Amino acid sequence: MIVPETVETGGGFEMVAFENWYAGRPLLDKVTVQLVAEPSTLVSALEAGDVDMVDIVPLIGYEQISSVEDITMVEAAGTNWYGLTMNYNRPPWDNLDARMAVVKAIDFDDLNKKAFFGRAIRSIGPLAPAFGWVYVPADEVDSPQTFNLDEAKQLAQKAGLEGVQPQLIGTPADQRVTETIRSQLSEIGLDVQVDQMQTNAYVERRTAGDFDMTMLGSVVDADPDDGVWNYFHSTGPSNPEGYNNPEADRLVDAQRETADEAERTRLLQELQTLVANDAVYRFFYHLPDVTAFYNYVQGYVPVPEQRYLETVWLDQ
Amino acid sequence: MTQYIIRRLIHSVIIVWGCATLVFFLMRAIPGDPIIQMLGPEYTPEAADALRRKLGLDEHVLIQYVQWMGDILRGDLGSSITGAESVRSAILSGLPKTMSIAALSFVIATTIAVPAGILAALKRNSFADFAVSLFAFLGVSMPSFWFGIILILVFAVNLGWLPSLGYASISDDGLLEWFKHLILPSLAIGAGYAAILMRFVRAGLLEAMGSDYIRTARAKGLAEKRVIIGHGLRNSLIPVVTVAGIQVALLLSGTVVIETVFAIRGIGRLLVGAIFDKDYPMVQGAILVVAVIFVFANLLVDILYTLIDPRIKYD
Image (cartoon, rainbow over all chains, first blue to last red; front, side, top):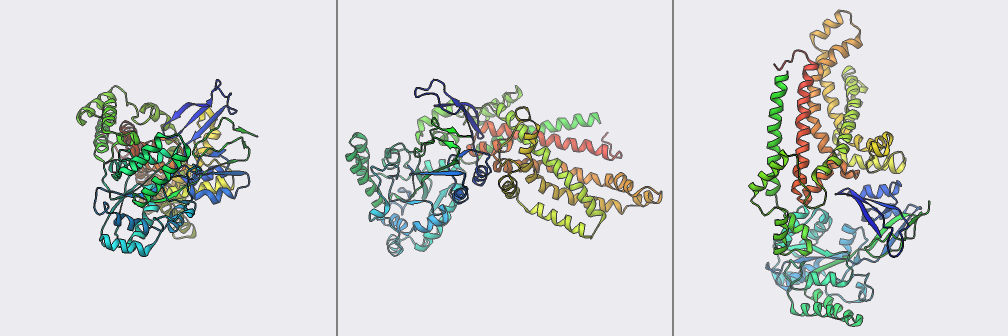
């Protein structure tokens, strides 16, 4: 256990070893955490040897860092999922055909290449790869969300989407994704209006349900429940699109009420199929959790989307 | 002169108050509710009301304004609403970093701009003049964040001469480390600043060197060096100092971007983070400090005029 010593808001913090930790004193005396907002600086700082370790390797830095011999990159399966949702309270998005047209019009491979440098793992739902006991790889099932432009066009025509101008809200961090989606959805006649804003303005609009489309997802989940109850239960706090399906509520509640892993697996996978069929989201991807450090950083044990440093020491 | 300075100080207080007032109300007018973001998934209208009450944001905006003004007069800038830090301690920790970058940028810029401007003016239409002009165009055209990233790649990653990020304080790490950490961010800002300043030095000196008093100085048999520095350059400095004063704002706004690129938690980065989080007390406090610096830099410029040109008398 390493406890915070000094904190500089927006700058970083220092942590010192907790002498009385039940599992024994951590091997490091002190850890200095520096917050770096600019991804290229983060990558350069590691390459220049100004830092020993980076928490999350930025997507643009994979190639640069992996070419450095003295640096180890550790990739763990992610506990996250990410997707595009549509507002049920705003027609035509209350219509399954309209939502499914959008879902089928999005080409994941193209999106992955343009927005995620080819690093994302295709997702069919909210169950992330780190939860191996319940995760289903995308290539093992026939997902209703698979890209199919012909079907998307037919559904769009049926739902009367030609010329519709949905408002897609996002933050500057979403820019690559929103621009790619706007381009892809123009193929089914949608003229997507991207409205980009700073995070707090975005969160306020999203919470108020003032959007047609937005990107949302779950990260740092300790259990799949984090990524399903918040988003797919009718009373979930991260359900701004207004999804309300009694069957989904039942499945979410039921998986919470049992400790039997096989039963939970069945319930969660059934829920995943249900929300994919309902096109609550166009599920995009799971990102792997990648950290990097110099080879002299020893004893690191990867835990998805967590950093435990009690066992780490510097072999210098 | 003393009366003038007192009058300007009174004006400065009014300007700073106006600036602080504007920021106070603008921050509340722009979209985005910090409470919703702070609560995240825990958001409920009841929890939001409770947090708003706790932070005093449930009061009418005019009451909040009067309270804030009262706190400022008592020297209390308040506490961050999104973090645990007091605004005063955050500013005291950030200000030396920002001022160090701005000061070194200024030194770098003037060290480059003045000799280069003189050279370009004295060797008008020569290769040296074109080379200096080319540098000036490059300096103005290169965005400081891009130049900063290039500097990191060259001097930190490839050559390994200088650190790529962070700040080292003189008291904790020594003068050398402080200087090494500041060179790249200061150069990234200073290059653009030097380019603008250099153009003014060149134009001012060209105009001055064509004046009658320069011909007279030469006719008196003064050495060319003395003619240039003692007469030409001194008389061309008024517009240069004016631009330098205005450019203090450019230096401070430049640090906003550069502090982000070099991961230095100065006033600029503090301000950007606080604006994104709608951390009202932090934004208000940081803007207040920036306004004070800017107003006093301009006052200093006006005082410098009287030293450069004795004909200027404010009384």
